[in-house]
Each structure stands twice: as C-alpha cells, then as structure tokens.
Length: 438
Image 1: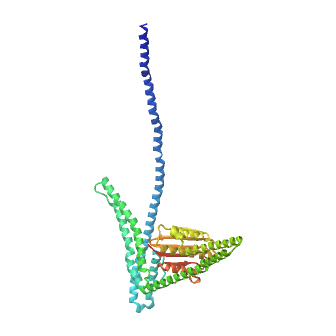
Image 2: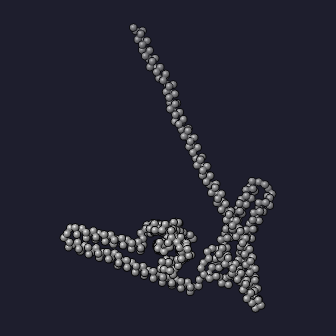
Image 3: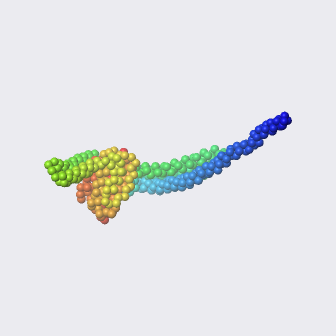
C-alpha cells in the first residue's frame, strides 16, 4: 500500500509536467501561422499599390508629350510666320528708302516735271496704308498727312531691314557654333557649354522674331494713326457730356411717367376699393371688392419691380455683368448663343452701361430684325471691354433710323466708348461696342 501511493503520485506528477512540454511546439506553430497571415495578405496589396501609379504616370506622360509637341509646333509656326513678315518688312523698308529718295528728288524737280512730282508721295501713301492695315484694325479717320508719311518712310527704311539683319546675324552665330566651332579640347564640359549656347541662341531667335513683329506693328500704328486735334477732342467730350445729360433727363422722365401712369394709378385704385369695402354690408360684395384690391396691389407690385429692374437690375449686383446678360438673353424670344469670357468684376457704372446696351440691342433684335437666332460675345482684353451683339436678320440697321442705336451710343459715349454698326442689306447685323476700362 505504501508502495502504490508514490507510484500514483509520481504518475500524476509526470502527467502534469509533460502537458506544457507537449503543447509548446503546437503553440509556437500557431503563433508562426498567425504572424505569417498578415504578411501574406500584405504582400499582394503592396504589389498592387506599386502597380497602380504606373498607368497614371504613363497616362500623364502620354498627355504631356502631345501638349509639349503642340506648343513647340505653334512656337515654330509663329517663328516661321514672323520670319516671313520680317522679310516682307525688309523688302518694304528698302522700297521706303527708294520712295523717300524719289520724293525728295521729285520735290526738288517740281518746276520741271510738274504734277508728276506727286507720284512718289502717292506710292508712299499706299505703302504706308498697307503697313497700317497689317498692324491691326484701321481706325476711322483721315489718312496720315504727308509729313507723317515721310516720317514713317524715314523710320521704316531703317527699322524694316534692321530686324532681318539682326536675325540673320543670330542665325550666322548659330551656324558658327553648331558647324564651324571646334574646341581645342574635347570634353564633356565643352560639349555642355556648346549645347547650352546653341539652345540659348535658338530661344533668342524664336523670341526675337515675335518681338520684332510686334514692335513693327506698334511703330506703324504710332506713326500712321491719325492724332485728334485738341479742339476736336474738346468738341467730342462736350458732345458726349451733353448726350449723357440728355440721356439722364430722358431716363428721369421715363421713371416719372412710369410711376405716374403705373404704380401711382394702381395705388389710387386700391384706396378706392378699400373705401368701397369699408361701407359695404354685403359679405359677397365685400369679398369681390377685396379680391379686386388684391389683384390691383399685385399689378402695382409688378410695375414697381419692373421699374427697379429698369433702374438697376438686382441680378447685375448679384451675378455680375456676364450673369446679367445671360439672364437678359433667357428673356429674349429669339434663341441667343452666348460666348461670355469675363474673368473679373468691372466698375458698377461700366457694368450698368454695358448691360443696358446689351439689353437694348437684344430688344432691337426682337422688334426689328426678323432674325431666327442671335449671338452675344463678351471679351475683356488689354484694358478694352468688347461686346458684340449680332443676328441673322434682314439687316439695314442705321443710327439715324431710330432712337435705339443712338441710345446705345450715348450710353457708351459717357465712358469714352464706341459703337460700330455692321448691317448690310440682307444681314447679318453686328453691333460692336468697345469701352476702355482697366
């Protein structure tokens, strides 16, 4: 009996001691599998994340390369066009020098050759007007005087060939660096310096051609555009101020007439209805009188809203000039195509004048043009606000045919603006309004 107890106790002790030792390998394997699961799930996600940016990068690169090539193609095309114009300027510059010599010689020989002395000056005037038309839209006014034409001949005979000579010198330098210059020591540093100089000369040539072309155009406009005399400018300002005063007085008379004939008459009618309702004893008649008074009050409110909209529309304050013109076009019975490019708000008086000019033009389209469609273009470039309202109607619009176009012109004149009417018989009609504004 005493021998069996230690045996039983020893067996129990062995079972308790062997249990943790037997489970330890299984626990280690389980921990290893648990640690391996996240790593195994993370590997495909990491690979997928690495693969995702690749198509986006290729797509961006595929879009960037055509845009860069298009920009480079436009730059090269502009450079070639400018080079052709430089050649034309050089040829006309030599012609201007020859005409200047002929004009001086013919002036000295006027007693001998008589009327034929004016031929070189006539040719010089034609050449000057040719260059003035190439420089931009021809302004209304007389042709340049003989003195200004001779001054332009003298200047253009120098500035015409000079840009081509400068471009030729730069091309010669590029040819020398690219083909003829051989460095004494061939190294990567010398190769880099030569490549950088070639690229710099090429960029300077491309930029200078456009600068030369712009400079020639501005010089032609500066020398050949008619200069208004001070007296003419004073007369123009006086007339525009008188037109603004007349337009303001007419606007006040219109407001007074609308208040007298519209809202005031309806308010008097409401008062009369309220007086009748006060002494009425019949409930049915009282309801009828109150309904009539309510209807007249609504009409008076509509008239007042129209009057306020005619003075300064709320949409102009809320949405700006482009939004107000869009709202006015939506009210036009004729379908209107809008092309409005206005990036910033203008001064409120300018916005108001242009908005009412556009609204008046669209009203003329509705009433008088017989058009099936109209269009409005708005641009603000280089300190000039340009508004074009056109239609495909029967044409024939004239300033002296009614008060609509004269009203538009008077509105623009207050801001030193201009109105150009293009309306041949049979259409289309275009009203081009321009206002100088910052």
